[in-house]
Length: 309
Ligand code: SAM
Image 1 (cartoon, protein in one colour):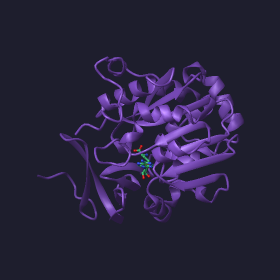
Image 2 (cartoon, rainbow, N blue to C red):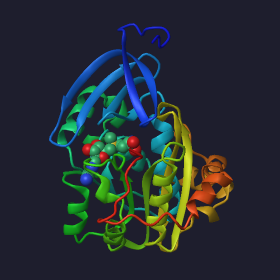
Image 3 (cartoon, rainbow, N blue to C red):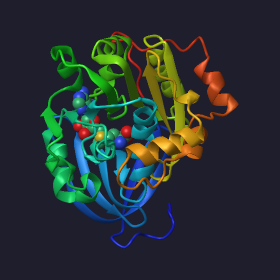
Image 4 (cartoon, rainbow, N blue to C red):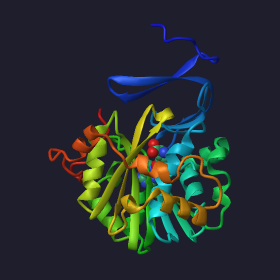
C-alpha cells in the first residue's frame, strides 16, 4: 500500500492513537533506539517535526511544538498559585517541564523525580534544546525514583505538583499515578494553597481516559478544572487536569494573567498568555458531557484507567 512520498531515509514512524487509527511520520534520521529497565526509548529526527523523544511507541515531545505542550502543562497552575516557591515534578524526563517551571521568579526549589535515569541521560545527549541547561540550575534537585514511591516516603510539602508522566499504559511504569489513592497521597504533600496539574491524554482519541482522569481528580480535590490544547505532533487535542483546595484557574481574567506573566516570569513564553488561558479552559459540549458522564468512575489502584487498547 503506498503511503505517499517516501521520506529521505525511507523509514516511517507509525504511532497508534487507538488500535484502529494511527498516524505516520517520515523519519530523516534515527539518533538513538534502545530499551531501558522501564521502557523502549527512541530519539529520531522527523522530516517535518524535528527531533523527538519516543517512549514505548508514543511521541513524548518534538522540537517543532513541545513549547505548546509544556507551557500549557506548567503555566496555568503556576500562574494561578499566588506565590509558588517549592515545586515537585513527577516525570518530565526531557527537562522541558523543569525549564518552564524555573521561568517563575518565585521558584526557590524544584524537585524533579523521574523513574528512568536513562531517559534523562539520553535526553541530555540528544535533545539539549529541550532542557536548555536546566539540569545545571542549582534550584533543580533531580531524583531518580518511582514518583509514587517518592511521594509516599517524603514528608516534604510543595506549593505546586506537576505530573508530566507517560500515558497510563497497561504494563507501563505510570498507570498507578492516575488513581484516587495516588491523588490522596499528593493531597497530603501540598501546602495550604497547593495546586496540582497532570497531563491527562488525548481529549479526542482517549476521551473516556481523559474523563476518567478528571473524575478521579474531582473525587479527591474540591476544585478540579479540565482543559486541553491542540498539539500537532500528538495529532490531537491534549488534555490536562488541575486540582486544588481553593485555587481556581477560572477566576483569573486575561488581564490579570498577563499582569502576572509580566511580573512573575522571566524568559520568553511562545504560546501561553491571558487570552490563551481562556481558550484552554473552554471545552466543547461533547467533552463537557463526557466529563459529567456518571458511568465513568474514578480510577483506583484495583481498577486503574488505561489508554484505549
Ligand atoms: N510529555 C510527555 C507526555 O505527556 O506525553 C511526557 C513527558 S516525559 C517524557 C514522561 C516521563 O515520565 C518519562 O521520562 C518517564 O520516564 C516518566 N515516568 C513514567 N513513569 C514514571 C513513574 N512511575 N515515576 C516517575 N517517572 C515516571
